[in-house]
Image 1 (cartoon, one colour):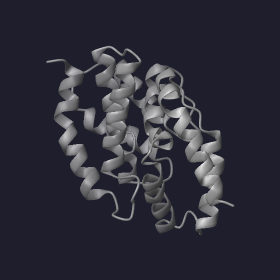
Image 2 (image 1 turned 90 degrees about the vertical axis):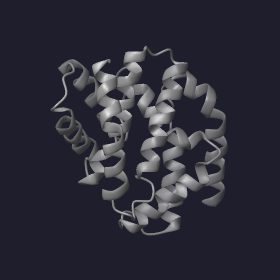
Image 3 (image 1 turned 120 degrees about the vertical axis):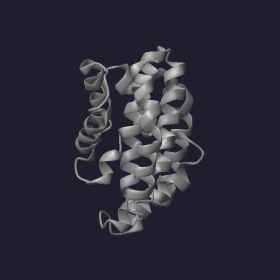
Image 4 (image 1 turned 30 degrees about the vertical axis):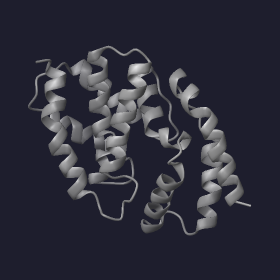
Length: 197
C-alpha cells in the first residue's frame, strides 16, 4: 500500500476520536464536524483541480490535522497542529519532503491566508468553503457561539461587524471554488450587511 495513504488510513480514526473527545465542548465551530467538512471539501476541490492520487492523499492528511492544534491551544494553533502531525507521523516511513508539504498546507490556513501553491490554495478554500454555501448561517452561528464562549468577542453587534469585514475580504484561491462559491458568497455578504444595519 502507498505509504502516505497507509498513514492517513491508520491515523484517521484516532485523530477523529481525539478531536471528538478532547477539544473543549464549548468550541462549537472548531470541532470534529469542521475538520471532516474540510477533508470532504479538500477532496471535492482537489478532484476538480485535477490532483493526482498522491497529492490528494497529502491534502487529506493536511486537512485532517489542520485544526488539531486546538487540542492544546487557540493561539497559533496551526503551529501546534504541525507539532501534533509530526508526533503522529514519527513512527511512519514516508518522505521528509512530503511532511514539509503537509506542514505548509496546515500553516497556509492561518488567517489571513497566503497560500503558495495549488495544495495550499485548495486547503485554504476548503477551510472557508462554508462562507459561500447555503449552510453559512448555521455554521457562522457556531463560530459566534465559540468566540463568545471564549471571550474573544463581546456582543452580537461586534460579531456582525467582524463578519461584514471578513466576508467582504474573502477571496477564493482556486478556479473551482471561485466558480462554485463566489455568487453565494456575495449573497451571504449581503445577508450579514443587512444584519449589521
